Image: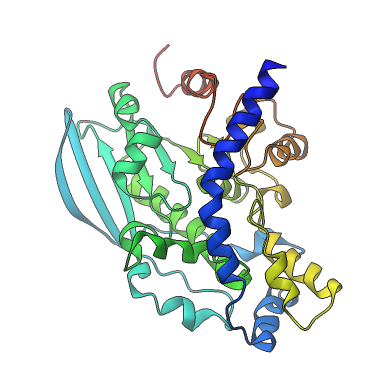
Length: 348
């Protein structure tokens, strides 16, 4: 009974965080749209077979791109580095390609690294959530100082349209998940996966002998997708992962403005959902995957984490009391550091 009450309290806090997003979504749903062009954009993913075979949609880098250390400063007994690289992702969809590439800042990728700099060390690669991405935000979210003090090197892969990858105010980052902009968001997801593969390759080139991933919220979504495309990561930890980008704010009101019928709206939803980790199967062993979700989570709904556990046959799923932001237990830290010990990343 007490746990249910705490889950409800956590849910209420999540709803408060969602309120501004719902207001923005209300106005986004009323934007002017050429529905014939929109229909072409959406149909592309069906016609190319990506909706039926999601893994074929993604492009994985084979070689590390050229990179530059843009900034290097002392960090504890090591170094903090900001590494940039040319992000050469070419949107698959020709109907959205030029619109996507018009964001010139987005063509530069960023990898942040906290390294001891003395010898090859195992690395935890962090993948941030939606609207996050600044290094100082990641330091708090992933407790990078603690991971570093445990002897690990730590890195952060910055999503497209986050941090330095988009001009203007913080709100400009919302372009990644513009309500109902199916094709643009699909390409953002593929671009995130592409740059995640770039980040791993750069880290290997810099001497990291073994790399494990931890993703939170949207970062959990991208980590889950990548774990289904590559066997390179030592592990994938998915913290309060998003698993369907049509929830919790539904684009249904936007779809209803179209001149098309209910069946077409279902067609659009499938084009917006096909790349979910729920529609893929991991390439790394289930024992190397950990999921932590919250029972009262309204931002990354809990029922989807349960569905992922079933589809992927996962044994390392842990469910917290509370919501996405407000929780009432210390499960996440306990199981995360235990997982790192079991995987040989930190000493017992």
